[in-house]
Length: 436
Image 1 (tube, one colour):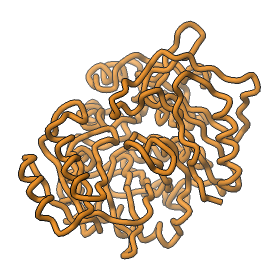
Image 2: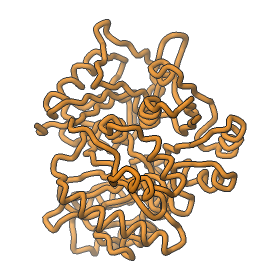
Image 3: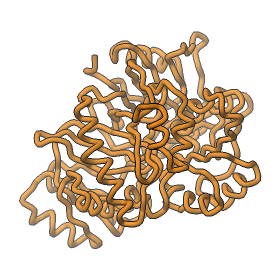
Image 4: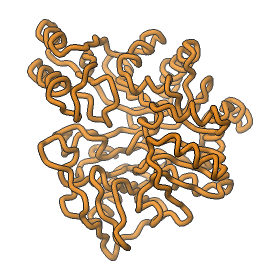
């Protein structure tokens, strides 16, 4: 099969790497991809079609006789690429425009969760800043979470420890163009305390397969300090997540969400990513995403031991239950190893502290930089100038290391990170701290 992967970051690099191991894949094209992918994955080609140009992507897929397309970015899904490809009889892994509202609208997701009986924090929605500010002033709670309703690349959620922070968050989102433009729809929800875990399921509208868990580090600096980012590192699997938890999440989160989405005429296909929190009262869903996480994918996929192509095909074709019956198991085989992924970001990232995110810095590797069979280098924000790779802003690259224990995986990841250099590089030094 010839595969098209849409996107340009570390997530798409990880998907391309995983599928390159399949004997049933004859070629992989990543669009738009990045310069680092072709350097590290022989046979991988990039195509400079923007991820949001869905008509051009359709024309390319038809011309190249693409057998299966996998969509990385949520913005591409929200434009309706799955609807478009299916209308042209092309297999594609992802959610429809209508089902993508689970990520593109926090209020929509909350309402579906309430309808499905999925545990989640209480919330209120607002379309005017002044009314939201009045709500904050009159609230009996001092802690709360302010979320913009639309897509925000992981930067539209502000966890507020007091009312002053909540007021500042509303003003920043709705008045001060924190995200580049003023937001006209937000929700404010109750503050939950606990440990966050990301869980992933591959869905086909009716059935699903549980893919695993990860714990992401969103803040820019050590100790979970600094601004929110798209993710500075991750470890997998989540150490607090047991087999009993997996069964509970499957029964009380993924299954009712799929049933409710189908009942409402918007069946969910593709990757359903549940952001969970384990509170003193049990599990609660913070939010849903409708695609693989970044950087979670970069550690999740290396921990899956088998060819993922049949599972992706089943998601696109609506045959997950058939594949499960054929294989005699509900999910792909997973390694007994654990993984740690560390992100290196550009100077100024994430661009919310008055410092411009820088591009154009040359990326250099020490002569003794070597990856063994349990190490992975995934490129994200990079460009090519001649034979050199240079930074292209944002998150630049990431290192994944697998091992029998988190402590050794973490050591291996940081040993490799220490051998990569570019001006202004930022990375956290505490990813997976405390994990053994």
